Length: 143
Image (cartoon, rainbow, N blue to C red; front, top):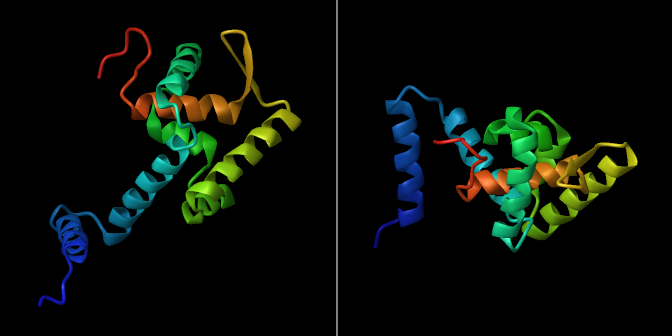
């Protein structure tokens, strides 16, 4: 019986690949943690395609935000307590955090008008990130 599980072997292969391609283990871990944060953010809505439609409307009015990394930074900057809280949160806790951020947006006047709907900036950006994550892009944009 092998002491090395399949999951551990896959992790080790990723770390070795990171070294082979001149990336540090920290960069590898950071990209993995960023992917987990994206998953938590885009998991906020159970109907992703509906959120994506709203996200596309938002991105059409804010084309400078058509970038997943920028959206993540605007939702929860990687050097902030928000990011650390989200990274450490369970799915349920992540949902509660995002709802709290939306509430704070309304309290502080951070509102986006998306096709006549008034959304918190966080909500609009979560929808936009969801749109990009599921492969929807604003009109005229090709990847």
